Image (cartoon, rainbow, N blue to C red; front, top):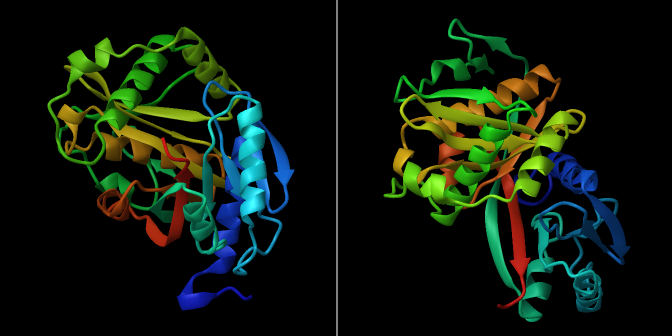
Length: 295
């Protein structure tokens, strides 16, 4: 199959994204092949998942079998890891049906990318990528910054923001604010693990500060060669729609460009979130899917 696949889908670009998504878990997990699938056995404080193997053409209707699904799930169960599947839907179009027949809940998410062509700094010190410096936060006191590995207080605060932000999903402004953020508990071992990932350059963490409230938004990117994924972008609900999330993304992309990354990707929770990223230059190229067994 050439560069343009079914319905104009850019298969070459999707395969580039898929190879990155296969490489990213390997920094904290062991990859174990089970037929057409690959299970990632985690060594991190969070679980990983099962993905289709990117070295195989899995576009055929019978590319992944129910037996392979059960065998891969059993492998994770035996090591005490929660079972979950993630994949690029256009590259393995039959997997959703196989998992649904096995009783899994399947969710589809927009997949977006943004090409990076270089970075400068504007006169305020913000990292800039391809004109993103022109997009200012609605609140002039909002400012994005990268975290250092030795900034354990800010790392812990970013994890609290992430937990709170993802507990109230969506983009709407909510009631939860700094009191709820500060009441969120974060394990010290998780803080230490994230600090080590920053120190070893496996992950880059950015936050957005508001003068009166400190850290109100956070996000990561995880560069591998010329690709990176923007993940975990979350904002304290009471501070949404003030430009804090955009400041985090701008800071992450600026750092990625300085590192020589040429393609940033992300999976949005839904269409509303995808539209937010489209406003800062991301383009939809397909879909990712995630599946979990019934509760």
